[in-house]
Structures are given as structure tokens and as C-alpha cells.
Image (cartoon, rainbow over all chains, first blue to last red; front, side, top):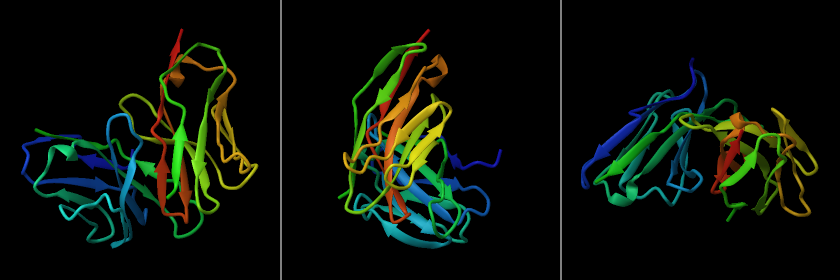
Length: 115
Length: 111
């Protein structure tokens, strides 16, 4: 299966540490999205890329968060100096096409726990 | 800003019962509307969508109609099965870039 894959699936870290998550989108999908989901809530948009360009960032994405998609393929999301409030499920999605209504395919997510 | 409101769950039904999950939205323009489903241990999957007023999205026996006058997109299914137990998310998209989700509704179907 060549769906969206995320690594790691689970991450436990101590407050103040840096963490990095990876997302591999569906091959040839030019759009890639990051969302954050906390318990009992729906996913909230963080940022999205079209190819290697980061086109939009949510105000939820503080200066401690940075996302990259260096070659327009996989993407990384780094959180520096983690805080307990960063504990959440981080979801990646990808879609194809530059116009219209492309369907977004989601990965299974990376669950981050900050202790 | 844009927002989506779903009925709170959990919703617990017996097999073959009729399902309705309410969803209303607020948007500045004319969004496209979606229902996503998340089965236990799996990622979000698109269930159905509608792109303009009065469109009906349907899939796997589920249906939802885009009602602009009431800003609603209620999900319905005539006869639920145990395998439909999941979390259902209503969402909207404007300008083709990001999804705005509701909080999700847990559905539990008992045999």
C-alpha cells in the first residue's frame, strides 16, 4: 500500500526536548498538509505545502514549530522546546492537483506525549 | 472565521437503526462540505462530499445534502451496522486549501 505514512507512530518526550516527525505522502501528490488533533476535538490545520513551497501557516504554529518539505516529497515537522500543551496527535495528509477539489488522504498520525 | 459544529456524542444505536448526525457550518463564502470517518486504529478517510448547494453526497449507504439556506450538512444512513462504529467528522473547505473540522461524533452500534 502506498498511502500516507508517518513516523514515528508514537513519541514520548520530556518537556523542553526537541522532536521531529516525518511524513511521506502518496507518491506524486504535490500538496502536503499538517494538522494537530487533541483529545475530543477535530483536527486543526497547521500548515500546507505545494511542492516545496510552504504556502500557508496557521497562527497555531508558534515560533517553536517549523515544517519543511525540501524536495517536494517527504516533509518534517519539528517542535523545539516542547511543552505539555504540545501533546496531541499530529496528522499529515496529501492531495494531488493544483485546482478543483482534490481529495486529501490522511496518514495514521504521530501521537506525541510530553511529560 | 470558518467553523463547523457537530452534534455531541457518543451516539449509541442498535443495528439496523436509522442514523442522523447533525452538522452546521459558518463560512464567509461558498465552501465545499465533507464527512470524514475514522475507524479504530486507522487514519481519517473521506466518506462523502458535496461542492455546492443542494448537492447530495453519498457513499456506503451514507448520505448528506448541502443545505445552504440552513447552513447544514447532516449525515444520514437508513440502517447502521456494527462495522459503522467509528468517529465521524464534518468538515468544510474554502479556496481549496485547508479543511476546517468539527469536533467529531462517536458512533457506537450494538448488535
